[in-house]
Image 1 (cartoon, rainbow, N blue to C red):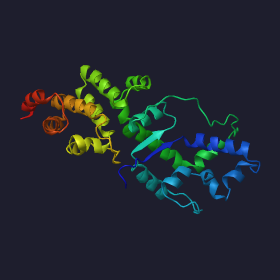
Image 2: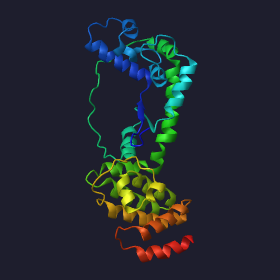
Image 3: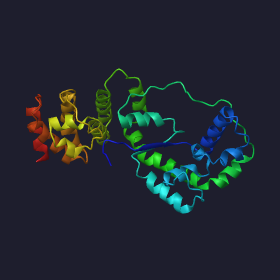
Image 4: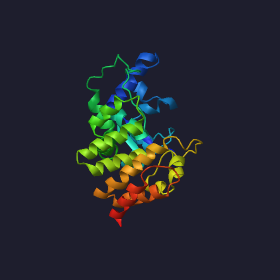
Length: 287
């Protein structure tokens, strides 16, 4: 679909979600008498009370569907879930840091809101819930694995100490922050990780800005932000600095082909810079 759209979801543990939803409705809606009334409500707005709700939604079932949720629905839900760009766990303490880094946002921890304090106690009900919601619990286990392998790949590139550094630098442009963090990583000997951080940073730049510097950049990074903008000059010098850094550090990694292309871009770009002589020398490494 539209490449400017990022598909993401955040999953909460099925039991925690269930108790939270029920407690809120029980405290706010006088029509709710028993949990059975709530679960079996025929009202469309109460679709989230159904057993295996996550599986129900992610498999694409219509809210009018009243049949059982089956193994086939579960397998379809998993296939659909794997199509998301980003899958997060609400219970993950780094959930919003990962999201902010993925989107290029500054994240500031905030006071929790929309919290139901008077949670309803349902002693003995959890075992029945686990039997009736086996597919959602299985799906949640898959989400845990996906969050650790796909979403947490950003945690591997942007380690937790860098998360904390980013949170302390709300007044600094995020790209400058990434650039400086990448240089620190490089100085610690992790050159390949530094390259990945810089490439990630470039992918957050508007595609029109990258095209202005060189159309070749769009062959290297797949930018999410493809909306055309007027001011393509803004931040172009920062991008040039990043390209220059990649032009030589890539030589020491498996990204040599990118390093060579970065050299060529610096020699061809119409954007003025001071790196011409240095890049000519660097290009000889790749030839």
